[in-house]
Length: 467
Image 1 (tube, rainbow, N blue to C red):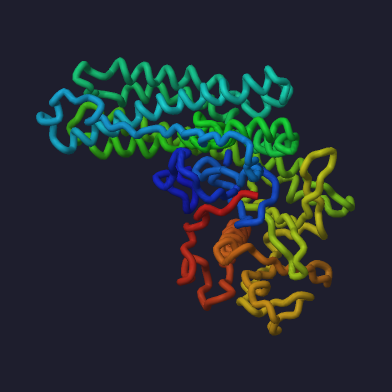
Image 2 (image 1 turned 180 degrees about the vertical axis):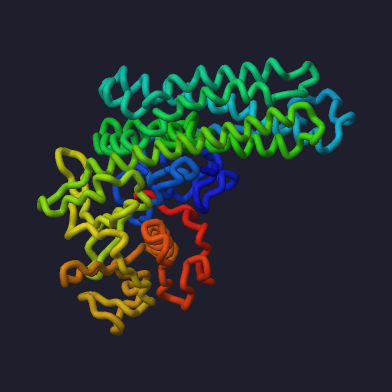
């Protein structure tokens, strides 16, 4: 299994930034991960680690009119983490003796080291500013906090060890000759991430649920508005280890890129590169299976006849998210490896669950059609005019015939992008189930998705939103 899941390259990933960005949510793993959101509802699975599982924050600061007699307090100044360069940190005149390639190599090694230091600081901050105070103030129970923070504490000494080794390898002038052997020896420690990443789906669900408690909401909001948070919410801090994990291949690739072919460190760097790719792929796979189990356990069956062995045997959840039917009702749709499951999100025992809506549809028998804008209107009429054109956009249809009965669903995605994501996932699922039968592309004459001029068959994860 290659490092990057289909359509996702680790080079496009970044660690959490201190800048405000428009929050997205999207399916490993690690990440969405749970409550429905209004925008971009598709969530891809299979590339769990490679994508961010950030979610739309439910915490919005209350805007209150200032009281005329109240003393006006200046807003807190947000702490921002300054980026550091090797050439600026070690100003010893060494740069005049090094080639531009070697300077770039030293910058890449320094970025690896500096990233470890930043990660350690953030993990300690998450523990000191969030976990410990919430436990001391009884805002959450110790059991709840253990579920949300998982094995985060065990990651701190692991990265302190790597940082210590990198600093020991650094010479007095600030340069580093060899890092490959350090990484080859240290990388197996990352197997610890298996349990942390696999827990993130359940952790995010519990965190979102606890935010409904006004004490939790107020505490997290105060933290978000404090300078130390850098405008990052708690989940952003909890997701930093996953973000760091998938950045290692990029960092190693950059060091290797600027290491001469005759450099003695090159062989070790190649070995380390192969190791990290294998480790990330393995963690990604296990995290995906964990997420699939999580959602299967939260399916509610109205009738015993709705139970399907294809659901029980599924180990892969290709994608899932909120879609609307042609009457505007919200549905939550799951595309497992062999079956499409249409559900309605419901709350049971204060937990978000998914009640099946009609029978599951085997992927091998599923038929689909891309509906052009304007072809659908309320009530299910096809190719009819409708006064509000915005409500007739981004529809597609899936159908299943069994025993002479036809089951049809017309789904509306939040936008054209997410609609295409759903269609891409369905294409791939059908091709995986029926490898000898190419999917007929409904909007062009191509016999396979690979031949379709409107779709890159490998481009399946362009940042869908987590729901």
